[in-house]
Image (cartoon, rainbow over all chains, first blue to last red; front, side, top):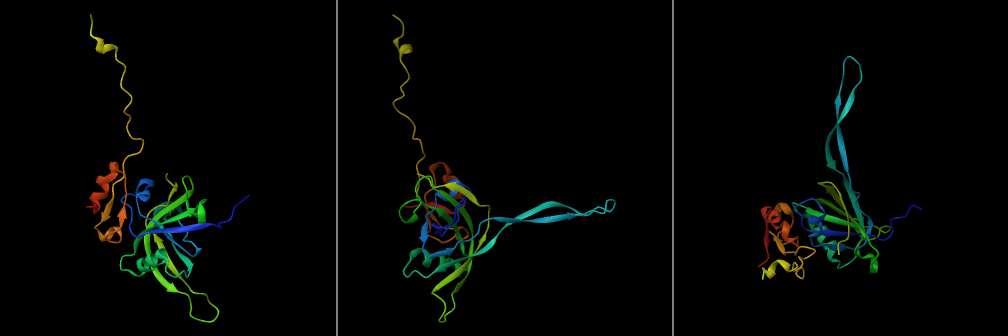
Length: 158
Length: 58
């Protein structure tokens, strides 16, 4: 049966890896960002190069360059959470370079244990926007994440 | 008598480590993210990290 996404968590690293592979991401220091509601989608989109042909009258396509998707993550406010502070700081900084790790953890409080499925991506954190200050919204915020290299699928190392 | 050394079996009591050692590095290049961010890459990959602006922790 298809599973749901409940239990998913997101971790943030303030640095990008030297290499976009498992070893590179496993070397980084990760901090849990609590209060996740919608996690960034990871993936790439390719542009297409149209190749018209006068004789056939058919325009075919060849694959163009890939670029990482730019999606938004939403969080409820968790006061004094180190991960939330770090991700807000990164989104507001001039560079915004960082990496994220999306975890489907089976440990205590959904912490990743050896062998759990994880996904890594590096990119730019940007566009920090707090939720509206009105009488029908909870405290929270959104940040954008634009992926700058292919997603790396891995399992939690020992 | 002949040379007894040829009858010795190889000494396999010293085995290499299964996983390479990790080294603590600190970021010094803003292009990699926050200055001062830490990483613990495998010793075998240190050269690539240092080339991109990471340095060994003192």
